[in-house]
Structure formats: C-alpha cells, structure tokens
Length: 218
Image (tube, rainbow, N blue to C red; front, side, top):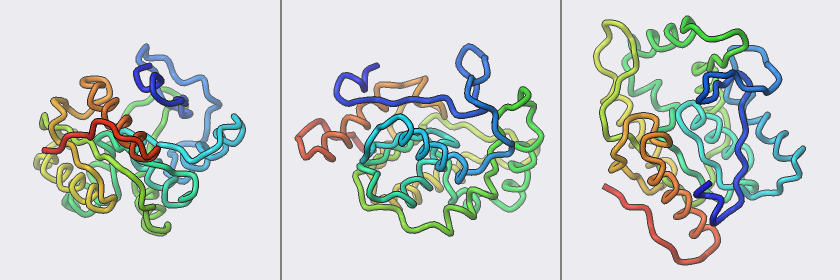
C-alpha cells in the first residue's frame, strides 16, 4: 500500500505459496519441485494476460530473488529496475561449503509442506541462471539482513557468513546500492517494510529520471 502511493503495484500469489494466514495460495497448483524458469515464465505470462506493459521494477525476496534474477536476464527490455530483499542467488552454491549446500538441498526436498506447496529447485535454478544472458544494466538495490540468521542444516557450521558473502557478490553483479543497515532478519519485508519501500522509491525515481531520496548504504 505504501509503494502504491508513488507507482502502480502488481502483487500475485505464486502457485504453492502460503499466505500470512496460513492458507495456501488460490493459484492453480503446478508440479513440484519448481524451478526459477517456471517462476519467470509464469510471471511473464501473468503480466501479458493482465495487459500490464513493461518495463517493470521487479522486487524479489528470498527464493523470489532467483525468479527476478532469471526474468531480468531473459527480458532486458522489460526491466526498468531491480530490488532484491535478502534474495537467494546462484552465488550461494559457491559460498556455502559443499556439505552445507548438499544439506540445504536435502532440507528443502524433505521439509514438510502442504499438498501442492512450493518446493524450490535450487540446483535447477542455479543452472538456469548461469546459462542465461548477463544481468541488464539497470538501477538496482540489494537489501541484506543485518540480524544474523542461519539455514537450519543440522550439525553443519553456521551459514550466515556464506549468505552475506553471496549478497556481496549479488550486489557486485548488479552494480547495485547495497543496503546492509536493515535492522532486520531474513524477512525484511515483514520486519522492516519501510526500508523496502525506500529502496523501491529510490529505483523508481532513478528509472523515471526524477530526483528523490537515495537508499542509504552501510
């Protein structure tokens, strides 16, 4: 609602996602696990069916960061700017140890989800992103949690250092403003939505060529 004060907003429920109420998304179920390519293709089809013309400012959080990353690589002309909200990236396959990566893939595959619930295929997404064209040169902001958190991987070492290293790489790839003073854990959009609103406003203003408050880096 805050972002809609300064630009048009389109939000949607991906198939298999869960709302804050705990209810499963009403979107038509799709085969699981699902890849970044499936998500990017769904987004492209959705915007076309809705008659929403680009270019778009794409905002992706967590697994959504992988979908936004691939969509941007495959649709340069349709992307005006990017905001990644503690988003996952293909760099995690390199910054996590092999043991951590394998344990994470096992955890994702075996985590209890409701029937039809989303199961991200991170291995497939990494391969898709690395096979895709380069990221477009557009205004971008990467928001990174500053309250340490770890993937639940049993007896594996803490994953927080690997996550922040991957965030640094993502910001470098995008030549992005990297905001690390987020006063939040992983769900930044829930714990500190103001920093997300400010980031979106920053890239929207830049894409429009209008002066506005810049996102603050630290």
